Image (cartoon, rainbow, N blue to C red):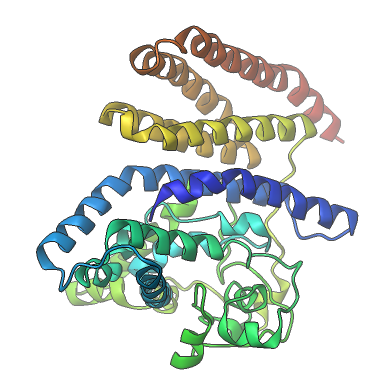
Length: 415
């Protein structure tokens, strides 16, 4: 709900992901896939860019509801922060649960479950729309009179808490902790496609809500991760839209307006029946191979460099967002989205990747330069050559791959 908490946590996220990957590498574990991890991170970048756009609207609504309809006015204190955190966490349980039980919400939340791996990068794989869809569920907080600092701190704590539970490195916490709080073991169950694990363990910080409402399951057999009908794509844009496309296809197969409207609020299993998706074999999920594509070393290096540049760009975008006009807000948001789209196309070996890359560089240089010229004139002499340099080097890299390395690689594959 409050992007600033995420902004300050970005360095920790990156360092902990590198640490987890290094541990897996040294222990010869196979919990990371390059394409999957990059897609998770790029999807998270798109999510934060979208949240920055929607934040002002949501906070305005929050303040208006509090000013006009609050029962009482509650200022920030340790006890109000504690009460708001518990309330936020309980409301999150229902937002999360309805995110699995209703197609409207599942279409957004499904993004977080698409990865077939389970590591810290999965925590950052978030929907671009779910916060907007779920925001009304949290309106009891302003209606009860909690102010914005209290709400923001509670939301930030609950959000950041959920990061560390996306790992296989921690087996079990102490028994008392496992009983009260959400842990990696509990959350591995939530991300699993094993039939006995589906739609279980919705809690954010507290697993007590699941025990109270009968949605708790203990981790017993090894989880298999992903969604029941695999996405099979590294495209973050498609990841955020594909379920709504499926809903549209499903609605066209239903005859009455009532059935079409009901589809919005029915569960994803019903849509699967309408479209004939999935398998009736309860053990089919065990035998589905993970989606994988081959990415040459030179393009892996290219993707990593582009990801680091994009991460810096996102941090600058979030940090300066309040200073930007709507034109620059949407222009930079579009640049972030087209960047994630382009990286997904590269990982899927789509030939149109080269076109999207050139298009985004042609857009990046003038927009980035003009923004610095307008808002940060002292930095403009450095910003312009930086943007041109990044674009020239990246374009040269792509052309070398397209004209030299790619033909050689294709020639080697010919028997």
